[in-house]
Length: 221
Image (tube, rainbow, N blue to C red):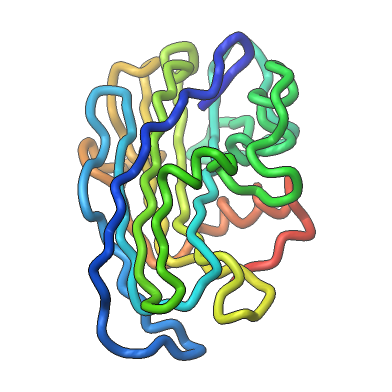
């Protein structure tokens, strides 16, 4: 999570995956999206997801951040979760501290995507003919050490699903820290896991609220 004074970490390149799936994608997008490798180690997210059976122009990701108990206000939205007030924003987006405090351009000029064009070129491999690909997501959010609680929700996105003009959320996962980066916890409350991810086939209502606040015109299913 880039905060003022911190640069957005450079992402490593992803390896290409040339294998081919069977079957043909249909409107309902009977996709299979799962972790191919990696996860969270220490305070570094480095995970590669593989996708097959869904017709896209490419793959991307959207990441939402909720932070509370830090040295400054971040983002342009506040929400209440587990009885605490959090600042919330689309990570790398136009209202993120990566842009508003550090003076960078948003990761994408008009969409809420997390990967810049150069990052996507090295970390996304997608074959339109087969509907199969991989996306590598990397983040080293050192700023979690300055906030009491920081939670992330990251979504794997099929760009322009089936030429519909809309993106499609394929998979979402939650991760984060409490106690100023000392304790890993995937989400607020007693349900938060202390290792791995919480994975879902759709994003949460909290994710949708922040996304709508920062990018009201973004269309997805």
